[in-house]
Length: 206
Image (tube, rainbow, N blue to C red; front, side):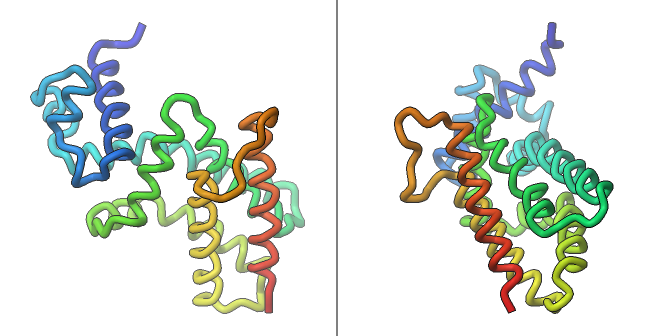
């Protein structure tokens, strides 16, 4: 059985994630979070200290696991030797698309992630860069070895565009919707295959 304090913290994080997804970081108040989580403000202050810290923990809860899976997948690809571009892209893309299938709030977090790109919150951008920038650097190093014709600036431009396309695919904003009779898993797998092929072609372009 979960300890009560852990349960309370998880309820707060889940409520915050859902409200941030629906209303944005500025639009969702701590009062709304406490009401949705059925806790008082003191519980939020005890576990997080401030709304800014709560926002960061919402990201940390998902991104720590996501990026650990990405790095593990990249290490596995590199361990095999002679990794190709599509394999490295798969290590970056597939764990993210799988997150969007997580039934315990994955889809809500994807919308939160999209808001992080859309809202100009410098503290949040610094937090994401400081805590997860090393993951992009690991992948950038792998891509640079496979794409020696690209200079560093050009490579980062292209990776930025690939990351944007991935966020779009995760959020399922596109015009191609899942057909009836096609499972969510199959739909995401097809999205991954198309995105990997598209990204590989863009990265290889002269």
